[in-house]
Length: 120
Image 1 (cartoon, rainbow, N blue to C red):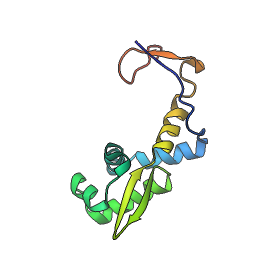
Image 2: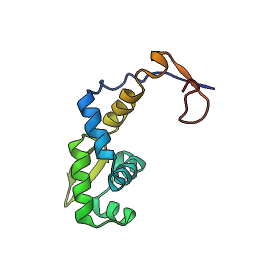
Image 3: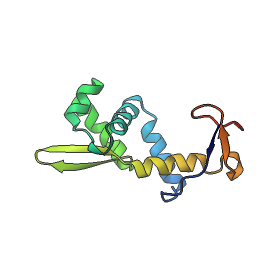
């Protein structure tokens, strides 16, 4: 079994920031867009590519990307005439760290299944 230990490579997340990030992800289209950016990795995606992959109108996607950006979960960069959106992995890891910070009362725990904690 794998032992889980806290990853301290990211700054701690404040409760307000965690709530904002979770609220942004609590909508199906935004969650799908964020997951697509996570899959794309550091190369990111253009809004056009994302809209096509997700089967969503570009105007709707723009609204969702703005919400994810305000929550600090995505960033954008102009590259020529295109915008490239990327997942903010530091913020994602900080959110995961916030959610699991006190798992098993701060002690390491053994994962009995992928994503599972034997003590939970």
